[in-house]
Image (tube, rainbow, N blue to C red; front, side):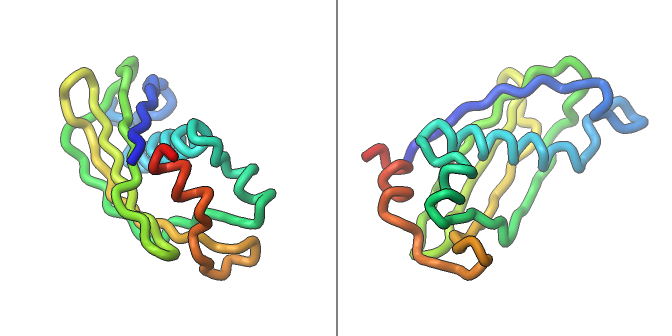
Length: 131
């Protein structure tokens, strides 16, 4: 499967009163990285919607390893580790230099435009396998 790297800079307004990135902001960082990963293989969210498909998060597990702070440059690695008929398993790892900051395991489902689960199309699977 293809791995994608995204770089994100921490902004001051994302900090909590302890000068750490607020815990809720990490989900936005990871979502930004997933969207960029999808776009990198030609599967942007608008493009998928135009073809009648949506990707919907059904479950996630976020683990914090070290705090991110203002001015940090964070790298996020995104990969799909499992692709079943309807669902996909994603893993994302965030680091500052070599320091692990956070990791996310996520399950997402392919749906039609009305939100009904549907089989993942071959073109999507092919894009992620590098075909």
